[in-house]
Length: 306
Length: 321
Image 1 (cartoon, chains in turn purple, brown):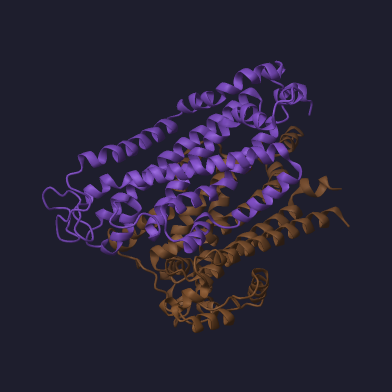
Image 2 (tube, rainbow over the protein chains, first blue to last red):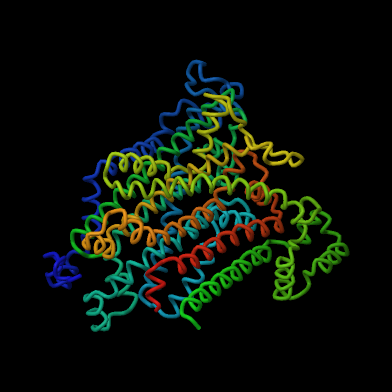
């Protein structure tokens, strides 16, 4: 097929000029484009609601999260305890209001670690190529051979159920997946004229990586952030659910499910409400990721830069 | 050497290399243990110097690390995974039944999820932006976000404890009874796994099918005036086979990790729940064995899919000639 037929106007403009100007605001454009979609707004609404609940929760909670206020597994119909009590007689509503902070903070931390590591590895492998690329990708294959939860559990069995370890391992298990995306974007950007220009001027390699290439790959990374945050929430909550994350007497949604599931038949609320909140939180973050992803695809199609 | 064979051999070589590196990571895990295996087995009795040294000698802990690794790897290859530190039995003996249970569970989940995702993925791609596509897309987007235990608990409340009481909430598979006589114990875990993995796979497949449909060779076939059915059967389907294979491998790989949380949730006696127990008890030989099995399943599934992809995809086949 003749290429000239499908070339759009934007491609006819001198690329170097456009890029230098546009790449700074590329991620802003992606966000603006994503915001026009209903799903993104719903996602942001859900996320904001849960985060607000987690922040304000402890201030409006009727009791202390470690206070014994009723017999274990009291049903929800006793006055002043709308959700009843849990397996040792804590107020469920109070613990729900307290239990969101850890889930959100630990997941954010794990996602940031994963993104930092993954982007660095992706930039280096995408730009350096040859043996560095080959050997780093082989090592990442090894990390990829373990499902994320299995890799984390392997290290928990060595070090013990430490919070820092869980956050670190969830982050590390994200890294190769993010690195692949960052590497693919870097490979393409490294061919553009402004990178060649910087190379010709003798700009240091680390500066080229972080000052020239990095700003141009922020949009796909934004999508990755949303996606990995969704998985982080699931993994961190799952690890607490398995008993390796937050430890009693902490109030944490994942831990609450584990502690109270034996009583699910007589008192479902301390299991159901945390499950519900974790569920809608992940749906919210995934909607945001999807909105960003669609915006990115749309922009690439319109500008002819893929 | 024919280029196709060379391509396959390279891929096999990479797979073997990955498995080798995986085994090193898993072996290194015990080496990093604060205190050694002998101390872990003896517990407080480790204060007894003579017994401690004798056990170290017996376990081969006084040999150089490299030699220990070779010995361990030799054991793994010949099916000797050592003894459990908690129950004084061979790991293989403790795990054989559980491996079978998990295999059946994964098989059921795969048989459910692979056709569902293939069907939904290709149908939504063919009927892009119709109501059907949008509703499947919103449904799969939401389901794909949910952690397995969220899906599992909602299913338990729906079908076992709160709304309907049709199915058991726990899956204590009886080792004395054949599996086909207690299939009801597999229903909820298998559906949980299916609902967790199918949406994710559906979305990937929809994207790759659209890519094929928008490709130049499909456009070319349409411009030639071929009837739509021929375009799909002769040009689109062969090229969409490769993503379908990749998806199947991804599916299996995902299930290998998904069983951990789901088996724990349902008290299902498989390798996933065994891993959780072993990690809690720091039963390192068990942890090593299970991690190795899961990683090997993952690597082999991907390897098989990649080789089949090389064999079936027209672009790779002809590109080499």
